[in-house]
Length: 115
Image (cartoon, rainbow, N blue to C red; front, side, top):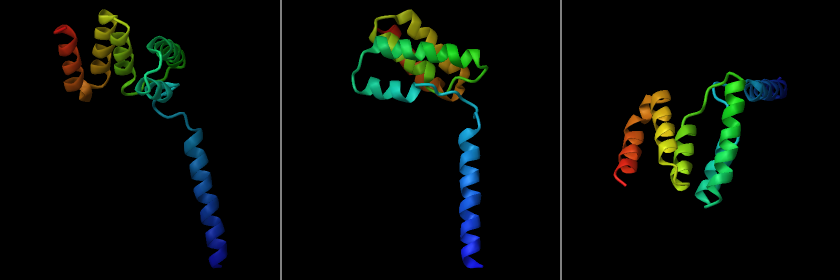
């Protein structure tokens, strides 16, 4: 009986895991995590921004939500590329979508306007 319960437990856990993995979730992450990794490793901001913009089009087309930090990351990439107006737009979008990020976005916006 004990072995039967173990096997049953494994089957139930596996079913739960695969059910969670296959559910769409609230956010569509696209290549966001890979682009943050690339950013931290000093890779080309232009390529990263292009990938995130492509992801944004897919997210919007699929009717999904943009994940937290997505617009902020795009804003940082715009700063690296010298596009201050685009960075302001991205930071403002991040602040609008995720009010809990307002303090940090205000900090970034303040630093951007004090340049």
